[in-house]
Image (tube, rainbow, N blue to C red; front, side, top):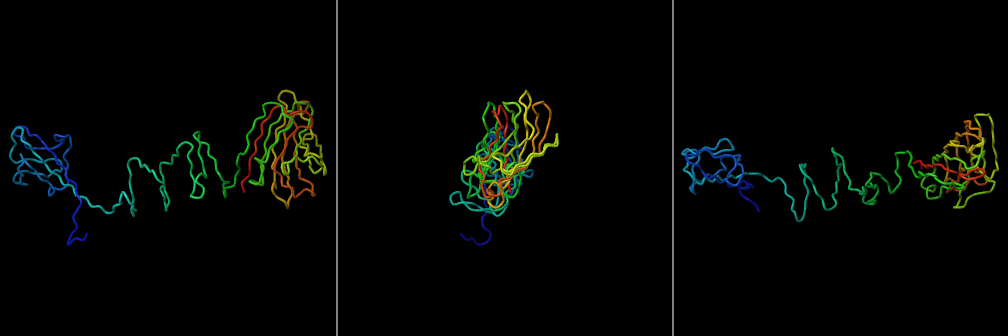
Length: 336
């Protein structure tokens, strides 16, 4: 609707009722209903005594913003009503039914509850942090569960993180009883990563054994003479190599099985999915030999040239004879 002149202001009306005592002139603070008297502009104030409207200045004074003072004292049980009109301007409104938008800032002192899906076209800055409900998710329109946070605070991603580099822990396992070998399946070694870091601590059930490895191709363990490796035994200046072995030999020194004797090592597995450059690794091992002495080995290996195009989707660790008694294994995927 159009208006001639100034459009009407928006306002609220409040009535304060006081029951007077004998000779009372000043009325302030809580009224008969426990509501404290406050006003902003004396021009928007009406005062009634026993239903009769009083005249400003000649009948009462209102200058403090919190009190009204009568010129003539009231009688006991007189009813004094003070009507306050507060004026405000509405710069923008949003319909509860159809919604709308604000061009400025919105300040919220309490809790904002949103039942729908809020959409932010600009940057949202949170100085106090963001709390997600237990088992809640943070995502995008195309991937609503891109990041999930469990009730214990563990964060998982539905996709690979891109651009930041680093490693993802894929496997953290404990061998608590004897096994013939330890296999890392295609659940962990697959097309997701092309490089991995394998870390292990293994104790043999049999004394005086070496540590060996094989790969899976197409889900099948490879037992043929396709393995080439070189090992340098630092403690005794020994050297071991093969260009057509049935295993990747990881150690030259024979590992002991007395209490505390074991082998600890790590391997950097490379070109797992590469069909141009062969799968290969480089790593090292520390161990106690059958005499209880510390020894170490630097180890490298790759598939022979005829098998360079093989896509590796699994890895096996085992001792030359006997079982793995106990151990731990961790596998990390290296992000590109």
